[in-house]
Length: 142
Image (tube, rainbow, N blue to C red; front, side):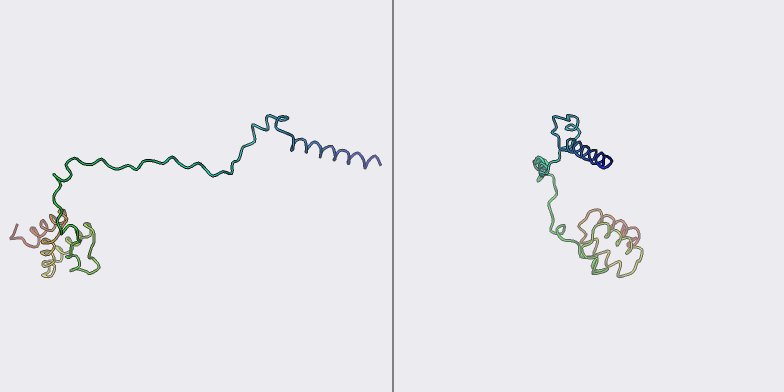
């Protein structure tokens, strides 16, 4: 009978000690209070609102800037003469079209290059059109 009571008493003693360790207040075990991380279920703090930055106004914005022409507000129409899907393409694509048209050297390509020289709003592309056409397409003009 003693063999049955000793393990039962040890199990009860171990359960009581575990209950003290688990449910004891933090003042009994102060090192456990420092090691326990505090978890907050509150939402995080909102970031500090920043003022919206705007660039400073330029002092001579209207005086030195060239006037805006109506042609610069619309994309050029001459790329659509090559392919209707090319209407409204960017300057890099128009430069590639100029190079391709000068390489072709056909009558229809020359007509498109003349239209490009007349209506191209981008100064870089217009200079490329005139430079290439002066050297390759219209050799007697430049």
